[in-house]
Amino acid sequence: MDLLDETSELAERKESQRPVFLTVLCILTWAACGIALISGLIQLWSYSAISEITNRVGNQTFGENYYAIMFWSTIATFVSAIICALGAFFMFRLKKIGFFIYLFGQVIAIFFSVIPAFSTKTPEIGGVLVLIGLVSLIFPIAFIIMYGVHFKHFK
Image (cartoon, rainbow, N blue to C red; front, side, top):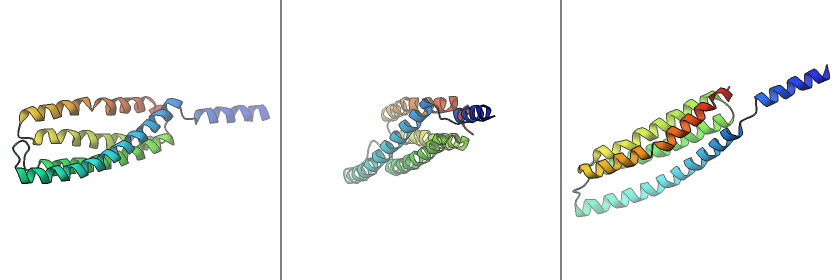
């Protein structure tokens, strides 16, 4: 009977083990969220300084609300980074809810990364911002797919 118990215990332990690639994805997600938070702090500081300069000189390139939109976009980046880190934590613990939390955080980030492109006065700058936004979608979509592949391991 001991051999049967040990075999079933070993099978249960193997089932509940986290795949190595999922661990790597979670660590990369946490690192990216940390970088996003630091980047957001720098953006908040720089947008307030740039906004002050353009108010003194005059603003011909961007709309009046552009810096307010950028401010809220940066706040959304903060919030989405925290939400994605939380989702990665739950996925690290093999919880299904973590995938949906992560997905929600990425949708917020994607949505708010495109909005500033449509708030400029000049179409050339808006086009460049849209192109940057489209290129920046590669990693979030890739991570969503890679986490989705591991969805079967979540409980």
